[in-house]
Every structure is written in C-alpha cells, then in structure tokens.
Image (cartoon, rainbow, N blue to C red; front, side):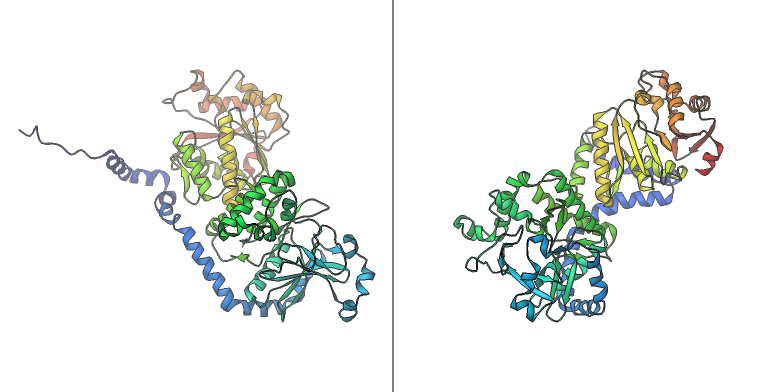
Length: 567
C-alpha cells in the first residue's frame, strides 16, 4: 500500500560526501595525521582564504603607505642620515657615465660661472615632463632637446641634469614629499645590493629632500616608441583634442595600445625577458615596483640591456609572508603583461589553466601551493603524492646532482628534485602533450617560487636513449619504463644507463588490475624482473624501497655499495 509513496533518494553529491566522511579514518591511518591535516588545509581552508587575500593585501598596502607618509618617513630619514656613508658606498661599483662619454667638454663645463660658484655640482640643464632637456651646455647624446618656450613643466618632482666630479648625474627634487624620498632611498640601496640594473645614488641632501643618481647613457624606451609613431608623450596627448576628453584610465590604455603597436620595431623578445628578469630580482629583494611603464626603462647604449629607474612608488614588504607577498607581486606582473603583450603567469592565470586542463582530463595530480591543485593530490602512487611519501625520503643526495628523468610525464618529480637542490634535470618524453604539460608545470612552479629551474625536455623515446648524446648523469630516474617496453630491450636500456650514471632508480608497478598495452608489460613491471634486470646489467647492488603508503615500490640500483650508503 506504500507503493505510491515517493521515496526521496539522496543526491549523488550527498552520497559522495558521506563516502568521503566514511573514508576519513582509513585515510588517517594510510597517510598519517600531518599529511591529512595538510590536505585538509589545501582542500577546505585555502579555497576560502585565497579569494579575499588580494583585497586584504591592498588594504595592507594602503595602511603601509599611509603609515610611511604620516609617521615612519621622518624616522627613516633620521636613520639614513646617520648611515649616509653606507648609502653612498654603492656608487663606487655602480654604473656611472663620465661627461666626455656624452660628447661634452668637461673643461668648458667647469669654466662656467655656475661652476665657479658651486664646483662640486654643476647644472647642465633641466628635464621636462616628457624627458626633454632644456640644456645649458648644448646637445647631449640620446637626450631630446627642447627650447625654453616648448618646455613642459613637470607635474610631480623636479629633475635636472648635473655634473659631479666629472660624472653626469640626474638630480631629483621631491618637493617636500618625505615618503617618496625615503622609498627611493631604500629601493636604490637594497636593489643595488641585489644586483639590479639601476642607477646608483651619487649624492643626497636630507635637508632639501633631493637625491642625485648616476646618469644611464642610452635612450628611454618611451622615446624610441614615440620615434616610431606612438602617441605616448604628454605634449602629444594634450595637443590632440580627441584624447584630451578621455579620462585618466582611458588615456593610459590608449598609450599602452599605441606603444604595443610599434613595440616589436624597437625591442625583441630577449630584451623583454631581460626586463622581466629585472622585475623578478626586484621581487626577490621583497620590493613591489608599482610603476611599470615605458618611460621608466632605459636601453643602455653599450650593452643594449634594460636599466630601470624611478622607484618613488616602490614599497618593501620584508615582514610579509612568502605566499602573501607572491600574490602581491601579481599586480606588477599583470602591469608588465599589459605593457609588453606577454602572458607571464599569475595566480589567476595558473588557476585558469589548471581548470582548463583538469576539465580535459589530461593533467596528472600536482600541487603548486596557494591552494592551486588538480585531481586527487592524496594519491601517493604518482606525481606530488609519490614525491612526498616515497621519493623525498629515499633520494636525500640529489643536491648538486645532474639527473635524467626517463618517461618524464608532467615534470613534477623533476621540479621537486630541483627544489631539493639538484643542479639540472633532463626529461625524456615522446608525447607532445606531456611536454606541454611539463613546461606549464615548470612555469607555474617558477611563478610560485620566483626562481628559475634548470629543467629541459628532450623529445624522444626511451628506446632511443643510446642514440642521444646527453652526457653523463649522477642519477637516472624511471617512474616505470618497463610498462612501455616499446621495440627495444629493457636489458639493453639498463646496460646503457650503467655507462652514463652510477645510480638507477626504477619504480615498479606490480598491480594487475590496470590496462596495459601488452601482456609482457605485466611481467616486466614486477619487482623480481626489475631486480634481475638491474643486477645482471651493470647495477650489482640493489635495494627495494616499499611503503604501505605506496603500492609501487622503488628499486635503487648502484654500481658500488658505497654509493647506496651515501644515499
């Protein structure tokens, strides 16, 4: 009689949630409490924190800037006044330009009336809003000259060209803005010590709030773009009725579009990469530039490399957490992308790419930090889970080693070894899709860590290894090449590996409930087969590393017992 009563079945999502809850005790036993806690933090805490973190960081930046403006600036000025000699000491080894290098006669310059009155610092001219020079000594190399009538007064800080003891310099007057004055001092000191391509401070006047920087000989990138027809100078925009009616934001977008139109005529991709490398150096020194634009980049005339200028908006975040600071760097990176038409990774870009690859089911489990993950990162049999549970604890000697990774899928193991101190990793893969994934993994980890990893792919089959001259290695890694026997002999492969590396680390997969390409692969994936192949073909000393957390044991083969003990 109850046949007509509808039965409310639980939804699939509820069933899945109940299964997860029921499986928690098993996961706790299998993976351990610390890893379960870490996975829970990744899966449940970070998804809530990350969307609001950029907003919190913007508020934090505003508070820091206001605190510097109304309280800390005076305190920092007193500190640098006491340490003036330390600040100026960087000028001894920094970039400097002599008067003669710009085609000027030093004797003629010092014979002027101004020089007789102030021999230490001789005024050569004043710079206007667009970087044009109202010169007192004639033309200067790579600097556009302007008449007094055409001179466009600067809107913020005053700039003039001066000579100090035979060197050409730029003097910047901050007009009472103590926070910008301090920002520039700290940026030049710390970035100079970090090896960034920037001018050095030649002189400082704490009473009048002026800094004097070494002159970088070479054209400003903005002027080179303007010379190719880009409408980017302030005077050009103010004389254009169609542009003057636009707001500040739309004018900025129009300038960027104009410069992007002719950018390839002025600089190449290598120059753009050098600019980004300088930006990364700045971030490594814990600085956010906040002022990336074409007018702040100089093309040094002798080397052709970029030099960065103008850091009165820069802020140092030495006390901010590593992950929070990395998210803060994204604003600089996006401004860089807008200026140069690049697609350098940020948090949003990595997240978007992960979602795309995950939806296509082509991406193995990886965790990059910041809650950025895909697939089942709890799995200890492959990728990030395999490294955490097995490889990391049994490959302690990767530091300084050159490593070959056979059947390198998405490069996670390779990057983890580099993070642990490996000198270089070379990955072998014949699949273009895997290489694409691996290059993305490398780029994403480089974004997350703000460092470069010495990893590269060689597109080839494992059977072709003997035909490729890659040099010698300290360790050869194989996640399970016996599952892909191809047309070659595994014994021949092992024998060749013994001639190029003293250590071979092989992962076996004895599972029988997975689809394999051929029946022979089941036999060749067994531990017994691997032990016999290694011991008979150049690796007489072997060790099996098995763990209940991982169903795929490792076989470590070495040519000497001493090597195995060193590991």
